[in-house]
Image (tube, rainbow, N blue to C red; front, side, top):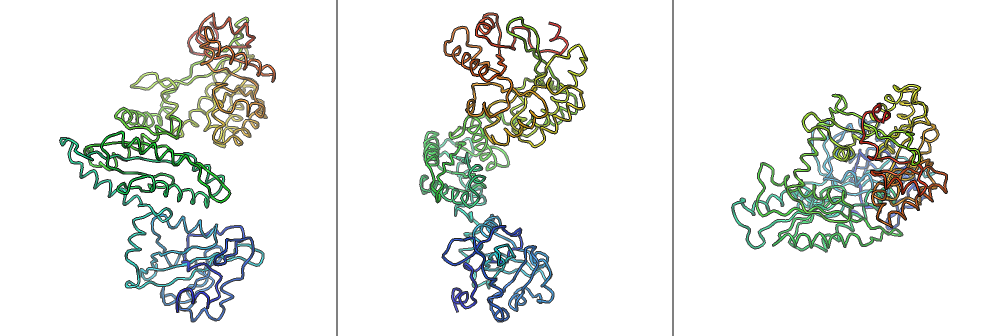
Length: 604
């Protein structure tokens, strides 16, 4: 009897056979009826185990029923033979306690997702009986079960034992060497193929001949997270499949195109010159910028590409890892410069990476060792030049490199996630400094910068409230400065956090206004009290009519909305005079002095 005939005889309303998959819980919370040839729909299905009824004992395949908690509810005679465990011993136990299921690379996540979305999964797994240690190859089909109300009940697995001579060796080899979703060679094949190609290059002393250079293109999708979060993993999988197909079509037959993992792909190709690799990267960027249509959705994932080209085997014990790291570094450099572009790796990038790693390591001890310090810059009225507040600015006094400016170490802190810790230290320390001034500075405000990661960390509101309580500083004296770019990743969450901060009584300032993409879109929706004109416009004021028009527009917009407008980067009397005539409220900059200790700033 064939497999399809057997399924029909069973009366199971399943897709092709699915396997015992102990790691698939928790079950989906929406009802899905699984019918061959039909898309899942929101209707309950009969319990296949009840439909089969008395046939279970005589079915040749192991049939295992599981509830929502992975507890075995059904275990037929074939299951007893397959696993050498009686039904009396199995029923009531968790399947994972009896059998370990081993998947091909990436299959477990795919299985879980398919059961959740489509209600079924089919594949070949290796199972190990924990009691006897026996290993078996299983062709398994797993389907979701639902109650009469459409609620999740559990899983049913139909497992067919594959004897050694029944196993398709070619299929198993393919599964072991290729990505289960896209069909591309997997990371194992990539590493082996790259090692082979590097080995053919020979030592650095040998000049490159025809096709004597090797190019590695590290491709990372730019918008894949948004696609997954917004449209779901099922659409995300289809996008990855479409990306793989486009890469295969765009690259040459001799090129190795592999899925490195997640939304990362690697192309390895022989080239005559660097220009050949650049041309390929350009084609890849173009083809992945073209919209992909998945059902009713149309998405353009975009891609950033890092390129490294070598003509000899890199020195060291791990030439493959070295080449991949270089291409990966170039890719991140491309993302940092705007995405949707390529970057070529060079030695300067490697030096920069090594320097950043050293700084990142040293940053871990900076707070505890007292290497961080604050300086302050005054904020003054444009008319009488009266001090109204100060802005706290972070410096790092590195024991070997001296005093480091924020633009050196803050980007590293952003990438490593330490920016949240640094930001909290700045907030607490600056409020403590302000509190130490006592009643003499009762009208002085304190401005503290808030990073995008702090804004969506989930702890900013609580941290600010605690710091205010500890210092005793009134909330209206604290100004939290955020840039427009802080809203680019998750604008809704960021906006909510600002409203919660505003409810504490603090002042919200929009920093670097005019440089972001969301200025007018979000300005009227945000609880903003202060607009700070970006220094790039202020610096060009004396001789640039365009800069003057921008500043005048910001002043008109801010005053029209009842906001205080502050100009940043004022360095000379001429610029200050122009701002005064334009009606700017306040300014800050080097015109008064460079940032310094709090008491020194206030005494000037």
